[in-house]
Length: 153
Image (tube, rainbow, N blue to C red):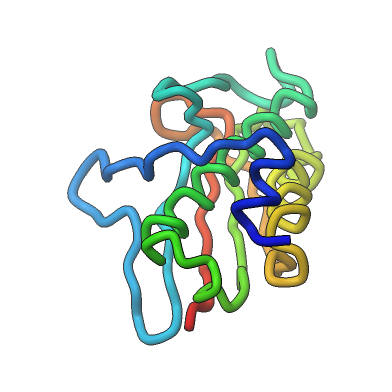
């Protein structure tokens, strides 16, 4: 099944890739690698999940945020590849940042929200290495931010 068909079967419509909010690129290409800047849990143009995990937010809230970040990563990939998903080699690595209270230690479970969706949509090409890091705060009080490295052809 194509990526476009898989997204449709899951009821996911990729948003327009977000423009950078400051002096950086949303993605940059170096050789056969595409580096995608950190994506926030934006839905319908709005930050959808804010706050800290282990505080007001539960793991399920963080997983929702991570899933939204993954959708926005795929929107950036789609833009970078001009919609030609056949040029996707593989998702190499994601790095997930989770706004966390000091005692929260389940960042890995939160980032599963992104990893699971990326693997489901992209299949073997979506399997990746990753890091899940707890941080005291993220831009705009976002609960999660995820960046990615992608191999392209």
